[in-house]
Length: 223
Image (tube, rainbow, N blue to C red; front, side, top):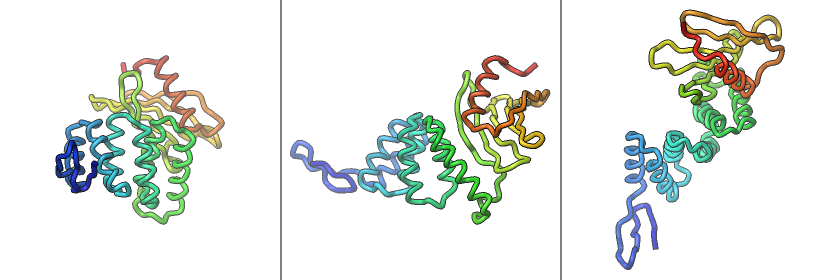
């Protein structure tokens, strides 16, 4: 017989004290701080077997899964905590990024649209104070990128930002030009290049595909 939460565990006829949920949570947090993501995820999930509705444990498990790049596990835990705390837009945005990383384009697009609707409603001051929100995080050709989505023009619809160690990041932005036209703009501190316009509002998936095609062909834009 085996139980957690401070109860006794009987193994081979010997009664042992099982670690409490608090002890498991502390251990998992320490593993997470040490970048031991897989171990942290396993420890959080052990605690969740006892307290499956605990938001802090669910968020911790999601962060550990993100670190381990186990996106489906991260999505599972964040969907759960989002159901428990539906009014927390930051959790919704984190879920959006993980849905995107897991390749769930439709789910990510629906969450992004929901954030825009909530922003336009103006009922959450902490959300309304922002002009954009994180849309995705990914790696490409050995570099890491963050993507932001603007709530409305003049903010770019999407901005891809290279996480450059030399403080000289490359950017690809999708900005509104005249009328209904959108333009892709490549920029860095020394140059800016405007590429062909698009008459349709690009989806994130279309912008990401364009980004990858351009970077694959252009190489570095730095002099």
